[in-house]
Length: 130
Image (tube, rainbow, N blue to C red; front, side):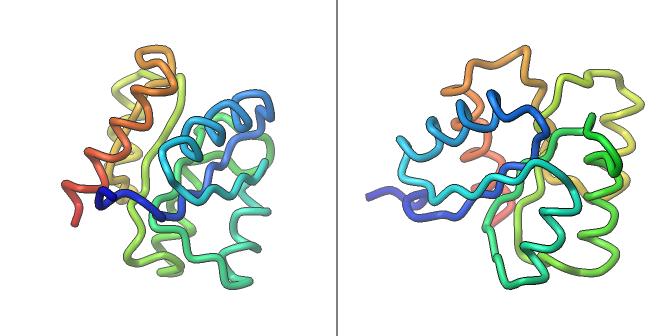
């Protein structure tokens, strides 16, 4: 059993097809997975007691985007120990910079990695944060 087994990951993306695909990949790698389709749902789950070890957020979402969600999570100190990763197709340096300024631990551009590679990237980022 590797160190990643049993880790809880929360996926935040308004694209349900992608959510389900990534959820399946993480489950196959022994992660416990929770999916939410909006920043508001994410915040209410966290405030309701959800304690993911890793949170993956898309940037482009209706209402509150992933960068704003990251700011809220960090400003309100909602998940101080969690690894916070942007999982997005926004590859502009300005987005990467904003994410880093907001306290992001990792930045993965969806188009550059297969879902299996995304899982591997997440494991590396989480291990590096520990």
